[in-house]
Amino acid sequence: MNVNKISFDIDVGLIKVWIEKKDKRREEVNRFFEFIERHDKNFLVIVSEHTINLIESWENKVLVDRLLDLFKKKAEKILDPKEAIKEFSKKINLDFDKFTLKFSKEAGIKHEDAISIIIYTLLGAEYFVTLNRKHLRNNYEEIRTNGWKYGLKILEIMLPNEFLTFFSKRISP
Image (tube, rainbow, N blue to C red; front, side, top):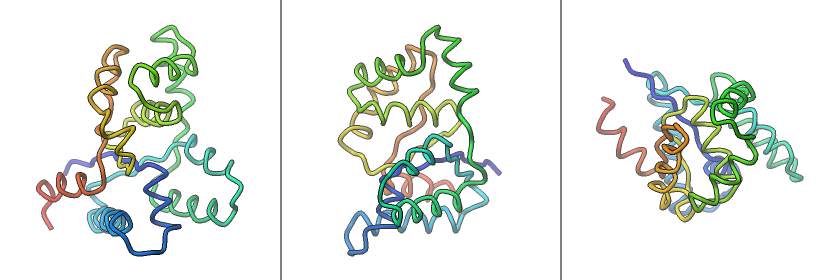
């Protein structure tokens, strides 16, 4: 059985733990989490220490606690990206922060999104689930093409419904 390495954006976690009103995004996110729980043998959820540190920096401690609980429960373990970043920076002969700034401009995405995409790519995630249609999903081809220039095979960026459609056809119930 092939285990698919996945990660999810903070926005997906935020909808899961914070938004209480029923709407399309909440239903989509709930279906995503139910699916990966139901098929947990098929998925390895990768969580970066960078994501954990970013969440911990927020001021709303109730939200922080809920998000940390979700990310830590879903992950096999929290991965430290420092070594992967160091090796990659050496390979391209460019400081990681300078690289991510350049990458974000060239790909037309926010710097924080570039950091997440590159870190999860370096950590071996194959799929990144996000609700960020405007900056990430709609710019996927630019992100992927930009990654190739630096020897990166960028992970697939999917909306929760795209993820469900894709894997529902590949995983038996």
